[in-house]
Image (cartoon, rainbow, N blue to C red; front, side):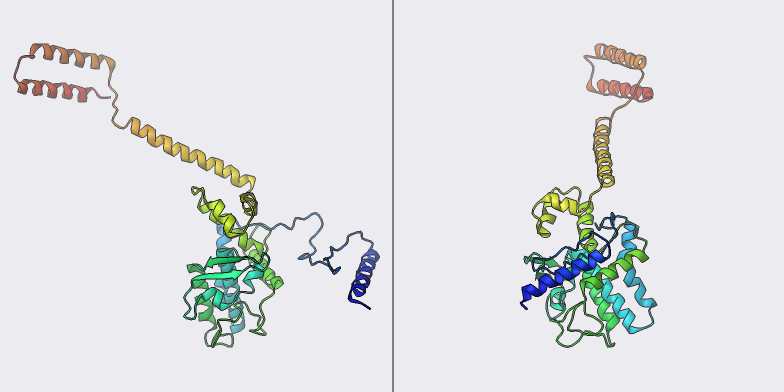
Length: 322
C-alpha cells in the first residue's frame, strides 16, 4: 500500500467515526489529507479570539503571578517551573514573539553573548521565516536573573556550555523544549488565577505588547507604523485590529482628545486675560477726566510734575479695580 493510499484510508475511517456520532461536523484536513489541529474544540458559537489584557490591575497580577508564587513553593521543582514560566510570560509581553518562537529560544538568543549581557537577539520566525531583531529589555533581564537565582545549586541549574541550550526546557530533559500546548496551559492558568475577564491564550502576550505600546504612545503618529514593521504585518489596519481596539477604547480616545483641546484652549484663554483688570465705567470716566485736566493745566510744567501726575492717576486706577 502506498503512502497516499494509506492517507485516503485514514480519512475514510475518520469520517466514518464522525458519522457514528451523528454529527455533520468535519475536521479540517491538511493538504496531505491528515487532520488539521485546531488548537482545541471550543464550544459551538463561542469565539476563540483572544485579547490583550487591557485592565491595568489584571495585567499587573497576571504578569507577576508566577513570580509571586516562587517563594511560597516547597520544592526546587516547583520553584523552577514558576521561574521558568515567569520568564516565558515576561519575554512574550516584552518582545511580541509568537509562542512558536518563544518556546524555541535558546540562551544565546536571550543573553546575547557568552558573558550574559542582554543585547539584540536576531532570530528567524517559525511562521513567516522572516528575521527579527529584538532588544531584550530590563524586564527580561530581571526575569532571567531571577531564574538563575532560583535554580542555582539545584538539579535545574543552567551551567556549562549552555548558550545553545533551550531556555524553556521540559522537566525531563534539557534537550527538548516546552510544547506550545504546555505554554498555553501555563498562560491560561495564570489568567484564571488572577481573575482576568477576557479570553486569554498564548497570543495574548503578543497582543499585550501591541496594545500597551499604542496606549502609551498616543501622541506619536509613527507608533502604529513602527509596530506594523516590527510585527511583519502587511498594513497598519492589520496591526490596529491585532490590538483589538474596541468601541470602549475609541470612545476613551475621543474623550481624551477633548480633554487635550480643552487644556490647550484654557492655556490660550489664560494668556489672553493674564493682565486684564475690571473697573467701573463711571469711575474710569472720572479718572480720564482727571487725566485730561492735569494734562491741560500742567502742560508747560517741569517733568517731575508729570511724574507726580502719573503716580496720582495710577493710584486712582488701583483704588478703582474691582
